[in-house]
Image (cartoon, rainbow, N blue to C red; front, side, top):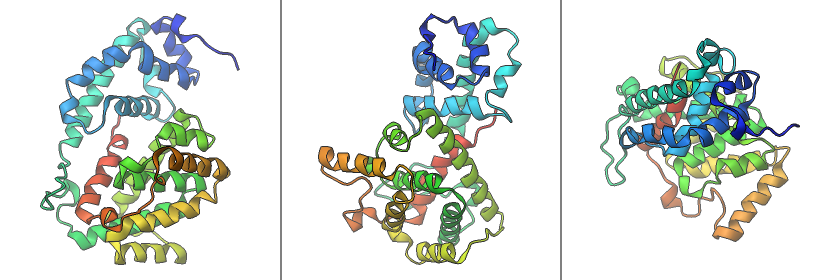
Length: 294
């Protein structure tokens, strides 16, 4: 494969390069060439956003790539390529504005307070209904996703519940035999599917579960406060179904040696318990990057 020196390429020429399917070019443009200018725009909204700049930049990359029927469809409408740099900066500013607006409807969770408002679209649903929706949602996603997708979904849920015991996505992508960009694209499509499943359930529709996953949904529903260890058991089982299971296990072992704990290990049951109110907020916050449309 030819190694391209993107540093020598004028920004207007990136349009045609990216439209040929060069994800690395788009990623380089955001994370290297325009990073300091993008950061200046991020600072105007940073107090209204949950994620840090690097995470938002990764989400913005997916936003540009996936907002259309084909990759980078929005770039096809650019007539003045000389203004491509300005287009990226203005699009990022609009993305930040829209995302901060979306996140403003999700209340922050006070660790010492259980009395928080529920989300707009489901504020009338009580805790039992939310637990039913979450249990059906998780079980159905695990039923329809392929092994690698199931693993990424499970580690995403465990990370939602405990970010401090999560392996960075870049390292896990490598262990899965994926590029980081491919991992982010996969995660984006997963979020979109999970959001669609959730909308079906919120609208009163049912998701057809087989016997195995019906039992899982019942298990989650009956013992929701122990969601973390329930998911962790499935996470461990899922590793063995991966083609790259040895690499994933090696990465986990590496973290034991370096940090003294097992990644995503619910070692203290009291710390792993969670209420439906908190999880509902965390889940909807996780789905936000997939809510945007260009």
